[in-house]
Image (cartoon, rainbow, N blue to C red; front, top):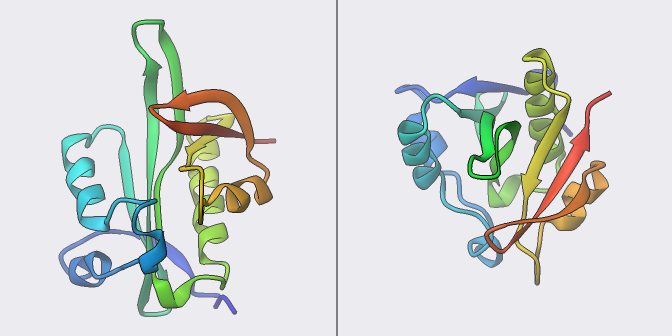
Length: 157
């Protein structure tokens, strides 16, 4: 059960070790990059990356990173900007407790707070795909691909 102290917090020196220790289940490792890769990407894409630790009480239970207001396809439409879930890692022993749902809803709220109307996400298809998780949250496939990954969108009301 999720506690009332569940929150997203910035990754800072005091929680860095706990955040980088987050590992998904072994059968999911091919589906999502490790947190250390995400933090490196956040450093390189500092203007658009929004990395956060998912914390329940005093325990880091996962990691989520959003992309905020990026130009989706500069060659085709340089004015079209999108925001969404870039990465979601829930610690292997913490899955199935609602932390992923909480994190996606918190990202959606941040995007809404910034004036966004949609949340985008991509996922790997195949065995152990997170597609059912995202579809269950209300995302719908757009028919687009980002590389080889299907793109989903959630309309914010």
